Image (cartoon, rainbow, N blue to C red; front, side, top):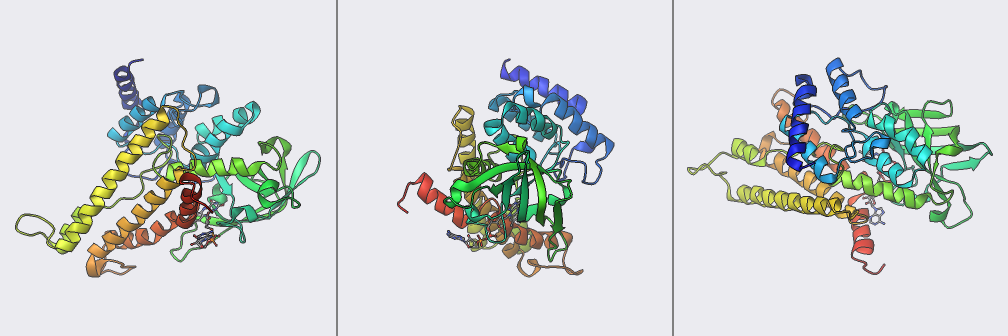
Length: 395
Ligand SMILES: Cc1cc2nc3c(=O)[nH]c(=O)nc-3n(C[C@H](O)[C@H](O)[C@H](O)COP(=O)(O)OP(=O)(O)OC[C@H]3O[C@@H](n4cnc5c(N)ncnc54)[C@H](O)[C@@H]3O)c2cc1C
């Protein structure tokens, strides 16, 4: 089909099926049955888009996807943005475990797990980090013992985002303690709704609990839920991290993630610093900083665009995803830092009537932007990967 025809078809379909209630600001629509109930309109919107395969536009139709090319998916994304449609499906299913299963799963595993992900019926969480294994992930100690018909899982994960809402977990477990650490790890899936799994939300100072401790006490993973070969999970787990970083770096599949929070720095500066007679920000230093940010942001967007086009032509990005992850996370952090600086005395307000809701939100964003430089591997870890695996510098 000619691309213009495709755009017209998409536009028409969205006009018919995307209700007003599913447009405008709002979080992406998270999957699974344990989160607060969606309104009927939003639930119907997600189901319609899911049935069309457009929650995961580039996945094959056989697994619940839309079978679109990258270019068509880009058009769909542009049209969704044009009508300000809420991101129809978020979460780790479509952005992390889904693509990994497409690459490493057996036919049965793909048919079992991918269609429910595409329809937003299941929520997934990531069981990688442990109290003694973060950046040095391969030191993980959660063990899986082969019991003939199934694996018996014992141990603990930490920082498990959304574990309290998850139906399934994908995890790295140790299946052999006697070999070098990278060679005794396996990648498994496991249902969370079983007696051997206990989830303890971690309360943050803000009152939020975005992540949990997850304990396994003789939990059971089915043999059919081993992904790839036994003791060869490190490669699968690393590839999943690349998909995670693709999303974090703004290169994920069209609908995978909302754009990270980006404040309007020009407007902030003009409001808090004022304008000169020409209408420019009335402080040379602030003006230069804001201009520098605008240039960096544009350069990054152009680089993302170029890389997306290269990906669309069949080159799959590997370790270089770390460049996008690190730069995107740093830029997000530096932008909110500058926003708070530009607010002067009104920056960094925590609570109280002397701060507006916007100002208090800016402080929350200032804090949470740090998290982007940690999850999916810290900035320092990304720099190590770039040095060793992209630039091939000596160890
Ligand atoms: C918001 C958020 C959500 C998360 N969600 C999940 C999740 O869903 N599932 C999950 O499994 N994990 C999750 N994590 C955990 C995350 O992956 C880890 O926090 C991260 O990998 C760092 O590990 P760590 O916290 O143990 O820090 P450490 O590894 O102890 O690192 C401490 C510091 O030392 C530095 N450092 C460590 N090693 C090196 C090195 N070799 N070279 C240079 N510097 C180094 C690090 O950069 C860091 O600054 C989440 C984290 C956050 C903040």
